[in-house]
Image 1: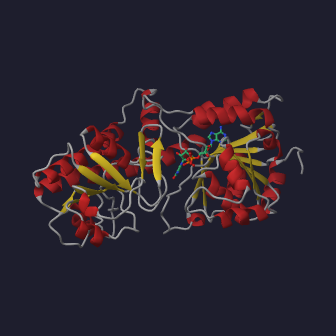
Image 2: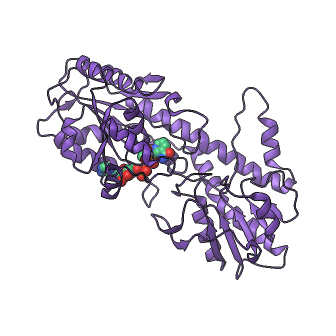
Image 3: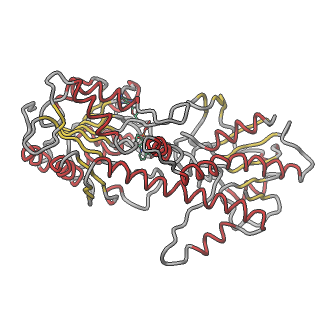
Length: 447
Ligand SMILES: NC(=O)c1ccc[n+]([C@@H]2O[C@H](COP(=O)([O-])OP(=O)(O)OC[C@H]3O[C@@H](n4cnc5c(N)ncnc54)[C@H](O)[C@@H]3O)[C@@H](O)[C@H]2O)c1
């Protein structure tokens, strides 16, 4: 193990020879798959996480993410992968990649505390010539205004982030993660990696590193450009989903099937990309990231009206689902209060084991407030307790005897469900995802 100062050329050759030691901080949905990519290419990776349960699981060759198998962790161990909660090992790394959460706080403002705590923890162990890369999604300016000052002030040798060729210190870049959980249409290697270094050497070092696991790297002129690129991608999704969510409500009133409209529109070979309506936004990214930018924009006396409007439409969707469910029950001379409803799907999207910001949670809470006795089924969640924004304390129910419920509400369209059977057995099926497409039955309510 070498703790000597690495010149950029030395680090580049350590990367190309697969000798560079890589530390990934945050062994979550982003950090763990990234670790596996590096391990596959025979890099020795150390995973850092404050969650000791995750560290123990990984060191025992186990995975806690459904789409990652224990065998993949064991395979990574053959390339030297280990996990730890001890930051002292940071000094042994050549490159340190930060993948910690960036949520919103209770006032809907960026909560950078995870990045700040990580920077504070690694700063004392930094050494000259290391490459530090931030991957967490955040507003433009975070790398240079928040991360670097903490790294610079917290290391005992008073190393500074290198800003000009010939400076001595450590290299810093921002490179956004473009993970799309559950999407198997593009291999991770084929997703181009955008990289913005604080100065050109940082960009080229980070490009050399990521170039060894991704087929294409996209260098940009600064960390802020890379930070903004990620936000543009997510805001684009958020705004377009809001557009179809609004049009879905209009189509409903007009008696037009929005999904049929989208299917027809997407036959246009240019100028149109299909987005689909649903019960509301979910996940760690699309409902949150746009607000990082609106917050930052205020510093520049600027209002991001598209983001606000999209947020308004998208947050209104669970309420629309409740309204449609109430109307459906009304058609059977029933009301929400006192009814028994089964919610299908807790995950924020199909076939994944992630319920962060899931619209199902809001739907369940709204139903309960309305006096509904709520049950749920989700193959990925045997039970659900308490999270940052919810406290459900429920256990997954079976898919048997669906006729006992006044309505079955499809919030997440997992592929394991037998939709014809669900429709055949249920009194009313409220379908927020077009999961019952092609099934002709009078008990289906599309919403
Ligand atoms: N999940 C996605 O699909 C996705 C996609 C693109 C970008 N992102 C972004 O990537 C970042 C990470 O997201 P995620 O989904 O992997 O989050 P996650 O919650 O799954 O994982 C984060 C991990 O970081 C650990 N952690 C927290 N503080 C730490 C600290 N101080 N030191 C070490 N470990 C610490 C947590 O214990 C957790 O294991 C976020 O900024 C997110 O917006 C996520």
